[in-house]
Image (tube, rainbow, N blue to C red; front, side):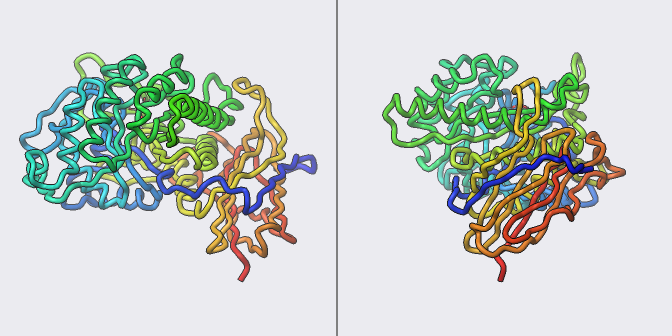
Length: 509
Ligand code: AHR
């Protein structure tokens, strides 16, 4: 509850504070052959809502409601041992294989063609990762030709024979996955990876110069090679790639709630550092183009918990229950704040993928043969994707601060805004990261002309560890924030401790 002592966060914003246009690709997600993401996630033949291809209709519907723009596929760590050709052709002829990354058996029932059928139904753009762990340039070219070449060559004719005469037209291609990580099958040094990525990219561009190619960056800002890795890889691959990837997962560790609440500070730091490194290489090479960031794995993930322990020994199950984290109200606040960070870097983050989409550290959960429900994190993603429109605006904040171990101290309030000049829609996305104090919001919006308040929603729960479950799927959801009001062009209201909010305003008719 607010007290008369609640501190104020003052926001200064102006339509001229433009960062970049909102990019739809900020709202990407990720489907990996991991746990139940594919099997009993997006695909479950015989499920009451399944279509003729076995895709769950309830998951398709929730994916569209989530507002997902693009989906990265087929991994993740999985891709570094994957033979793409195992997943094409008649299903009965496809081999089952051990997936070393997740100690599971991959039946290959779903492969590239099925994924593309699903992507069309889900209305998402595909992003495809090639295997540069156990494989190389030749296989990267093969899968590219199979996917994108018009009929008339061996691999595209094979695609046509498999029921897809038209090219799939995949534009975004990841050159491997997390090759900086010692856990990766076929892990490489920066020099080794720079070589293979450059050669793969050069060949793929010879096949199709219009592809958008993404080199692997660091799998976290905490990697010992962070920074040096990006510099080495880009120095060699600069000419041939468009983006460099960044991956980040956050969790409350050792009961350090305050540092967890400040996670977006690390994301800001991560992005700023990769931009600085890429621009340093640009200067060194006297290059004109700028390398953009593909933040193609981000989320809250409790990696240290039992949920993330893969099977072991002789146990190689198909689609085991793995990484099925249950998200709390606080997780959703941190998650919404990560989206604020991604949006405010729209000048350099050209694409992002929430990892992952269904069942595996996911906003959508399913029960085999049963229902599907929304985790707490579903809500900030869906609302941001739906309402972020026009230009992203920088928001200057004068905020109280809170102490935390990881960063020393951090601003309690955080915010970004989007402004759609044409329709007159101004939307503010706000986080109160303070665990104890309500913040009084104060934002002078006079420079936007005559506005009216359309909606103010806040995601908050008095128990920050409250979560949504199959039986109680609506425990944590955004509620109308009736304290928010617009008076004489000034927006005021209360942002409860540990909360994420969206405030929508429109030009007064
Ligand atoms: O998203 C789960 C895993 O996290 C991915 O497979 C891997 O790329 C990352 O380490």
